[in-house]
Length: 188
Image 1: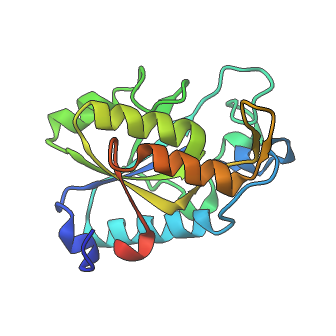
Image 2: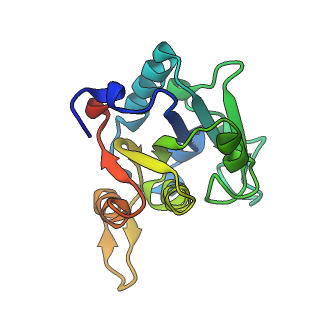
């Protein structure tokens, strides 16, 4: 990424915000990293709006009865920093990938939008699934690491991993193959 920020991206680069809903504030998710991620995503959103660039919001509509993301629950609402405006594109999903049964790919292809700038939650779940699929579908993807976050997890060998460790490993797995990992300061 060059230091000229947004100017180095195609004008029609899409800001794709994933699952930034109040559901993630529920303590059941456990400790997280990047406490400022919503603020950073909000700053990206403001920059995209000011430049007249396309914005797409992804909302998770869980079908799991106990999910904090279930429609009708307080957690289903968007975070205030990234509240969609009237007329902004929104796709609701029920799986981890924003491309599965949503119409997102068709929407992008019909409009000739082939560059995505992705932010959201969680780095190791819906963000990762969406980035991998976007890369595999041939989109150019920039993943804004400081506008994403995840949660503590126990790894396959039973070792407790911090949210930052999970985040960092996910980014390492994605960078260079499915996307280019960048920081918000490089874009705004």
